[in-house]
Image 1 (cartoon, one colour):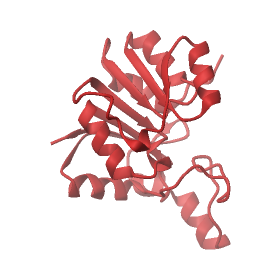
Image 2 (cartoon, helix red, strand yellow):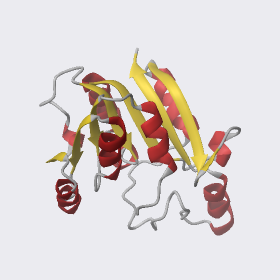
Image 3 (cartoon, one colour):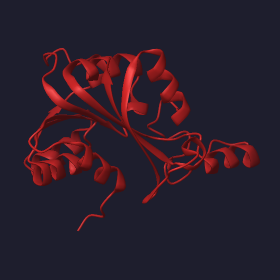
Length: 196
């Protein structure tokens, strides 16, 4: 049995039963399969990795092989209750465009990403002078899928400047919720956002 992940737990609590969901960067489809089973969502996934697509199909999921960095033109505005970008926003080329598109096709957007300002990352960078490798950032610099290195404070500022409403904030390290000093102590963050 697969280990239950805290990010998936949080997202399952956010998503309402029977919702229409689009999971951008759905990977092997574990989150989408769980949402379908536990919340009876009507969901679709998008991923660029062919092997991930095959894993989704084996789970009986509706999934499309495409690069959402080029937009979501085939989807009408407001087509989904939730668009999910869990551990995929920092891997996109055009963050602002992808978020705009997600907010256009989704009534609400769930964004989850590793916090690059976590204390372990800061200490590794300070003491070793090299790109950090942590549980939340497990790849060396030359193999990382991450194109953008953002902190919780960065995303908060980004949302405020673009008048994006932050409806919920969730911070955690491993399997432990973080209640104070999240920009320093949380390895990951999940935001529920909506266009204003």
